[in-house]
Image (cartoon, rainbow, N blue to C red; front, side, top):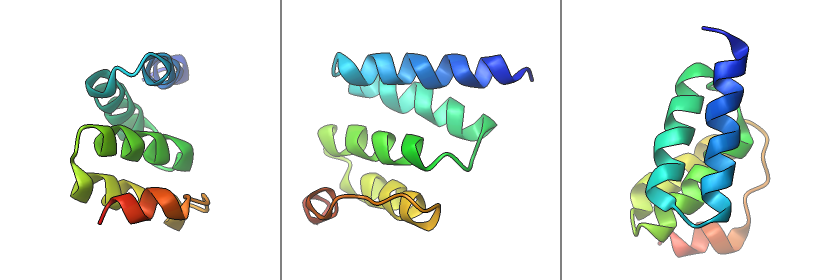
Length: 82
């Protein structure tokens, strides 16, 4: 797989994040994670999308993974999980 494919999912996911297409964010960031599983920012943003879709357990799992990878997830986001 070419690295630019990873970038395409990454940037398209961010574009969908900006327009509040939460289903699209989850789809694109899930593909991005499958190709580059160590991207903490993507886990955090997908976690936020899961929160917006009221999928709190999935959001919490993504936030925990982002923290494991060194990202500083907001306490507010963690509190919304539950």
